[in-house]
Image (cartoon, rainbow, N blue to C red; front, side, top):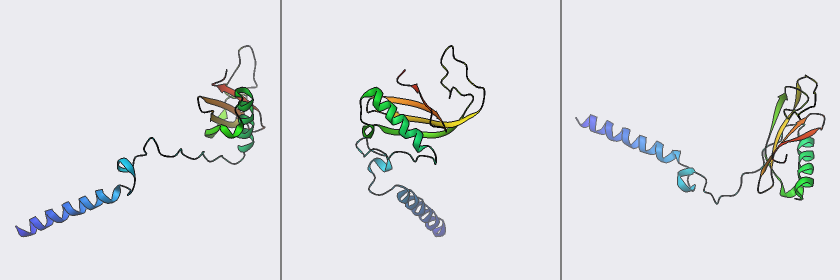
Length: 131
C-alpha cells in the first residue's frame, strides 16, 4: 500500500515538474506574445531574391509616396509561375506558356499589404493591393 502511494505521488510530482518546465519563464500569458511586444523581424530573404525585393519596395514607394525604409517586408517565397504573366495576367494580353521561376513578395506600408510577383530576371508585377 505504501509503495502505491509513493509511486502515485512521485508520478504526480514528475508530471507537475514537466508542465512547469514547459512554460518559458518571463513570458507573459504562459508563453504567448502580448499585443504590445515588439514586432517580429523581417523574414529571411532567399538567395537571389534581394534584387526583386528592392525593386518591389522602390515601386511601392513610388506608388504610395512612402520612403522605402518605411515599407516592411512581410514575406518572400520562391515560386514557379505557370506562365510569363507571373500569376497576374492582364485581360487581352497573351503570355508565353513556360514555367517561370520567381518570387512572391508581400510588403506592408503601415496601412495595407501589397503582393508583388517577380521572375528571376528582375521583372516585378504588383499583383494585389494597388491595382
